[in-house]
Image (cartoon, rainbow, N blue to C red; front, side, top):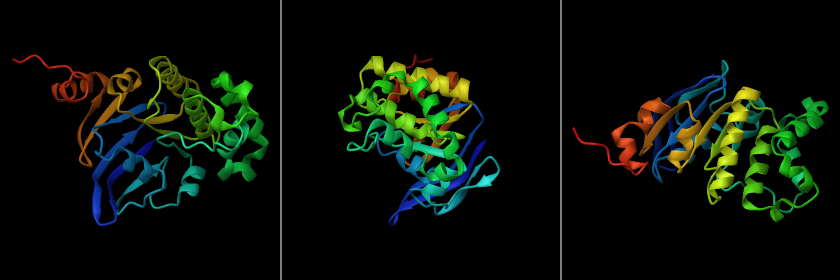
Length: 242
């Protein structure tokens, strides 16, 4: 389980996150939805150790990880797939994937080929590109590479920041199907940040609505998708008036 309690984050003198409380259970997909500037990416980057929280705690399976540097957070079992993919364009697909094990390589290098095989089974389209440069892949292939790299460390929880950005609907559906596989076959917890709220709610178990750095709504997929505020603001559906 991931437990986030009272999390606050400042960037410079500006407070971005205010008293965030979130729980994610094993084998669960949780979505964070909200408008641009709501603090969604800041939340993921804080959980991943890229920003240091100014208050609150983050506990992953009974271990405190808040305040740890990013490389130690990965070693504890949390992996971030950042917005914009951020693959290494000048490295091969295989090299990009192997970098996903960097923080654990010397302890678990005997499992490197096993992890690589598992990721390639999940993303078979990458097999033929192993020796090709990451920068030569299509947008959809680069996103699959970014997710695969995140899975190489065999994380307990994986955070995905806008994985559908700039991709065709068919590729978005493939990525969503992959998230279901990650959940069911690996038992990995998933936190999904998505502007495409309709797509996110197709696969999520629970969702949190973030507004100006505060959680204003939370509930099951059904509760969130039928909430009049969410329907109007994020799904483009005008709720029927009483």
